[in-house]
Length: 113
Image (cartoon, rainbow, N blue to C red; front, side):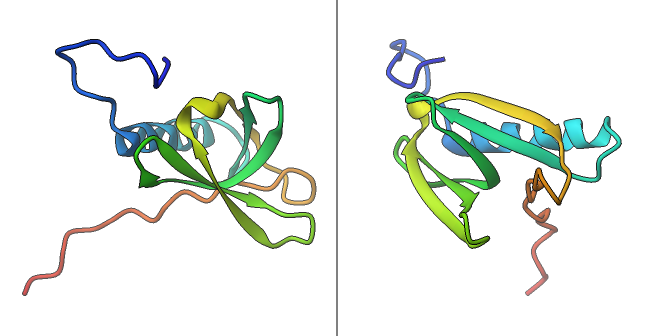
């Protein structure tokens, strides 16, 4: 799928739907493997590989936010065009060497007013 490819008469793909589906895939992978969390690596078009801590559809307009672990253990956020992602790899997490991905907390029903 190329973000630059659009067929007239079809809706543009939703980044939020893409992020939701990636989260669902990570959740399914975690449920079917022995590790409590999943290690997620994103490969960008230039070959750079990033260990993903979290993924967000913000700011939108064709861009995603990748939360990655920095060398000092601090989290960094990178805003990249969705078309820059070439591959997303999933594997079992091992907190000492392969940190786990943090799925967003599920949203419950809105409180009654």
